[in-house]
Image 1 (cartoon, rainbow, N blue to C red):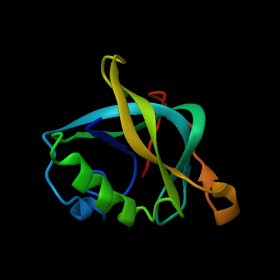
Image 2 (image 1 turned 60 degrees about the vertical axis):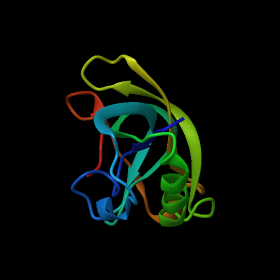
Image 3 (image 1 turned 30 degrees about the vertical axis):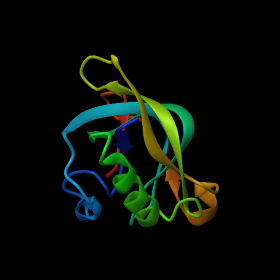
Image 4 (image 1 turned 90 degrees about the horizontal axis):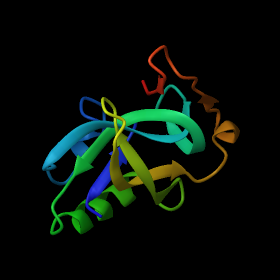
Length: 128
């Protein structure tokens, strides 16, 4: 698997975009099912039924191990976030793009001051 789904500070234009060690082959606006939580500083995601909008970053097979090593450090995995796989869908067509790595908050987000987000008019939940 050579794709990573991000929904928060690692997205293009966000404060941790510069943490990516390599440029991707492609970035696609995508969504996955989950429950997205917010705090002023960053979001958290857990399993759920909302369509969480984010970005799918695609890397080559020879790049993915390096990228995951760096992101595991950035996301303090497995202490703060846990890396797992989710099915990801294209935002415009809703067609499956396959499975991708993503990071879910390890503990209950509410215990750390996060609040759940609700879908906007377009049916997606997104941060910020």
